Amino acid sequence: MFGITQKNILVNSTIKLFSFLWKYWLYIFIPVFICDCSLSYNADIHAKQRITGRYFLYHWTDGADIYYLHKGIWDMSPGGVFEGTIQEIGWNKDWIVAKVERICGIDPNGWYVLDVKRGSVMAPITYENLAKNTNWDSIKCVPVSEAYEKLVRFLD
Image (cartoon, rainbow, N blue to C red; front, side):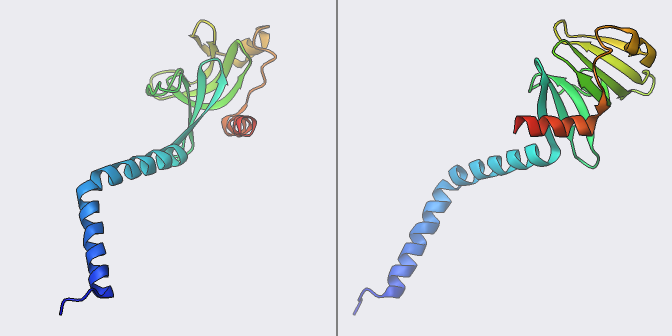
């Protein structure tokens, strides 16, 4: 009268599967959600590459290509070290030179120099003064997108 059929086995196993998923959905859903969000966040919105010392060039692609210089991987201060977006950049082990467009409209745009060892910013500096300084005259500045691409290829 009550024989075991394939239909009964299928229904029974389906019920067990759904009850398992219902009971443990948080353990399954949350890690998948976190991994998915963190991967898409890192890949789509921003990526970082080490320049020198503890300084990283961050590339934000949320609507427009924007580059910031930050100290350390967890520093997310607005505008980064130079408090603005990087237009051109060059560096060696001691200095980072960048043409910066400041975030705050009243702050002057221009060339800024970061002493990597001290963490101090000298700004704004005229292009002529950059060329005269023996510490900075050998640093070649290039468009930031070009510099970032070279960093990505170098670090891959």
